[in-house]
Image 1 (tube, rainbow, N blue to C red):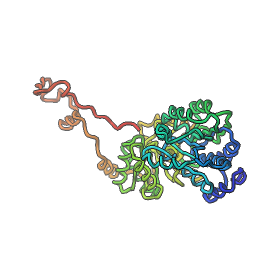
Image 2: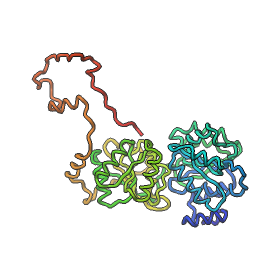
Image 3: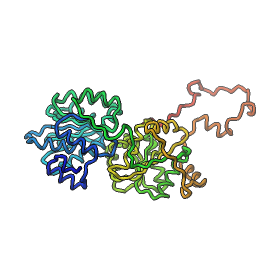
Length: 442
């Protein structure tokens, strides 16, 4: 099947052809006819299979079939879970609709709301938004959703995971009852099905891949390695195999910053992206990575969904995710649009449970990668890495043990059994060592 057989108008076919596509993906060939007919849709496909074009192309066609109103009210609303995904979806609408007289814009948090208000006042046909910033506009009365004809929930499962269900319900209450609803999701959890039951009317169900499956064109492997040697192995793989573009996942924001800095000390250009970064910093980091200005992008699971990096060759799970489904989305950043990809996971002793849960989800064992002779870590390399890695500040008790030679028994100490003299002004509270806390979870 070709795009010409899907009933799309000439302007859309021209844009698709100029983008280099000739044949629709399975999700596109099944979803586009359903959306063109005006029915509700519940669609699921593994990440990287072209879900965005599956709803963007028919949505653009349906809107273009009706004459635009002079005031240009919002007629189509697309909700996404993250800022990066919102920006990418809006860019796809612009790309596919460049030969049509339709206006598109995107609103998300982390940036000034004033330019968004200015654009909205000029009128837009299609709005792509994150739920939180959309409700900010609603509260300021800068957005009117009473004319929306089509609603799309993209990556709906991720929105629920991020706690957006209450916001989604608030937004649904502002929309007209009569509208077309499209729900796209990488997975079909029971919670998603409950949301669909309350939102969709006699929907067509499309699922082009088994639930929670990884892309077949992604080669997966694991390295069993001591936690303290992960950084050395990563540097060795990147340098030894001359990897030029690598997306590395960590569990925490602090861990992402630290690893990016350590790789930079190893002479590997790196940058980090996570939720504590400003939107400007996140945008610059992603742009630098896509343009090849940096070789490594270290990220938390904020990048596990929605990031479309063309022909990304390598994904590394520096730390396994706590939620097994996130593994599928992480490695789905490679092997997209029919290209091959490579996904490697570093597994230490503390992560055996996460690995077991991931393999149970995939219903398969991930192959164990043996270190090649050229990549074997020497003791000098390990010692060098450990020397460069800053240690955590020691607790007062640990510092005393270091000064006194460690945990010796009381019988071996000359002052064993002697009562200690209280220090002037000391009390139970001041004598208690202060607690030291690790970094907060992502």
